Image (cartoon, rainbow, N blue to C red; front, side, top):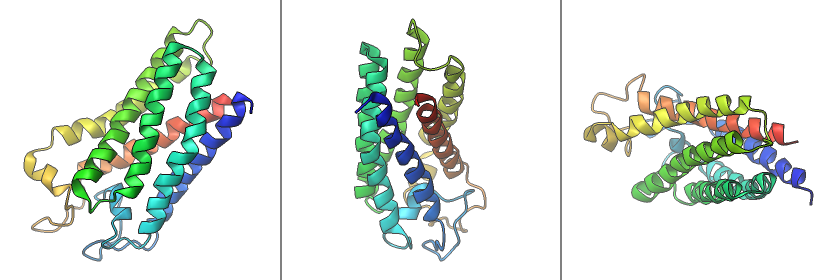
Amino acid sequence: MEVVGFFWYGLAASVVFLVGVLACIQGFSGMKQEPFSFLNHFISELGDPRFAKHKTLFAVTMIATGILMVPFILGLGLTFNSTLGNVVMGLGLFCVISCVLVGFFPEHKVKTHFAVSGCFFVGMILLIISFTITIALEPTPAFPTWVILASIVALGVISSFIIDTVILPKWELNMTNEPWAWENGRPRFWLNPFLEWWAFFALVGWLLMVVILSF
């Protein structure tokens, strides 16, 4: 298979990831029978087996996205064909494994879910950083140099979610494990899940950009 053939898998993974997650919102009813909102619900709530209508679809989406990403990551590493390219490939595979594990460990498996989802987002940050450095240092870049700026923007958005999570006070961090358990009801706007959704869209946008430019 030619290297460019691998990138069809990346396109399929991006579409499955985006469409699958958004489809899970339809008909959602939370722990307290509330409708879904991008302003105060976490992505993982869409796959919680205790109440999510499309929990199976969510799990399948995570697993399918990870599997489809494998050929794409391999193709990306072969495109760079360098030591840094191998680093990109290794980090990409780490993200792929984390994504698949999110499908196997939904939100109600609190500690494991938090660990694998954290690995996924942190892994994506490291992947984008290594990708950007690789482009900047290549004598004949495989991608246009403006991709560096776009990658930095995506990196900033995703990092904002991780940073906000790290600096949460302990009580609020505990609430992320049971986001429906606010004493006076879930706030209409909750910054942490809102930033997670921005990170999700930045991540999908970055993947689509890389895939499209690879053809």
